Image (tube, rainbow, N blue to C red; front, top):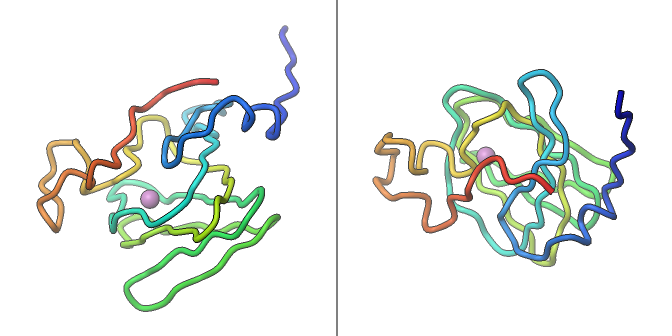
Length: 133
Ligand code: NI
């Protein structure tokens, strides 16, 4: 067996672009993805799955239609499936996402054939899936 240590900081040093999740591990059908976030994402929801955000560094706000939460290092949240959300960070924030393989980052606004609530295509923020580092 190839038992590996996966070091978040080491992996985060391998890329610099924002809103472009990189897969670092899989567990059954779930993927662990590191992403750097800065600025505002697009409103979206994931009709088939919850989504986990674990903040490694920096501060992440997640807007919901009826409230907003702020997460700091060592904090996490689970966004329930179907709930509209918009992540944003004033300064760069490093986050670990946990979600099933194949989830589109822009959810119902992404290029999945679904028209979404705004009819856009993720505002140009839809990332290619399954990019490993
Ligand atoms: Ni999402």
